[in-house]
Amino acid sequence: MELIKEKYTSCPYYGVPRMYNWLKKDMGFNINKKRVERLYKKLNLHAVMPKRNLSKALKTHKKYPYLLKDIEITGVNQVWQTDITYIPMRVGFMYLTAVIDVYSRMVVSWSLSDTMSSRWCKSVVEYAIEKYGKPDIINTDQGSQYTSDEFISYLKDNGIQISMDGKGRAVDNIYIERLWRSIKYEDLYLKSYENGIELYRGIKQYFKFYNNERRHQSLDYSMPAEVFFSFKLPHSFLRAVQKKKIISKTENVV
Image (cartoon, rainbow, N blue to C red):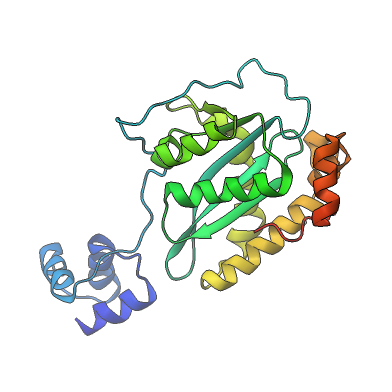
């Protein structure tokens, strides 16, 4: 039991199967899985791991059609995409959500949390709208957070069209999926953050680099913030930008 507690402290993602194999193959104990399972119950231990399906829908929630199939995206704030991914750390994990402007690829808002909720997802979109104006369309998957009454009502109240990926069609949300791939392979997998504080600081630094320094081939090797802020925006938005002193360096995205 002491060995299990010690190993669990350093590897809280170990469930019964992993712990059983560690005790048997690495520590040489003649033990079976049922014994390990009983000890887990006695110690009140549970493997710490993210939910397997972050996009699980609820049957009672209304789904909306995918609107981007035949649309030509010609400017900023025309289409935004948002999604959730999980980020493993040395101990535990957190969830990351972000909102990107599809035309410029700029991350207009992001947030970390140890739980997923529709209110959390709504707050990230709400922050982006307050800072950069509202989009014509927001595209999401069919996860319960995005099909919830709270999230849907907020978009409708702001006159935003709702677009959702088709079931099993990951390519429908391809732009933000590419963002997840970039941050994981260019930052997270290389640094393996210890805890939530380190993770937050690392992601903040990466998104600052991603928006202001990383050149995208799809943007003719321009930078997302450069494309976003150089686009001809409505005068009402430009006045709001001047009032809030927003500059092309998007350093305060949270």
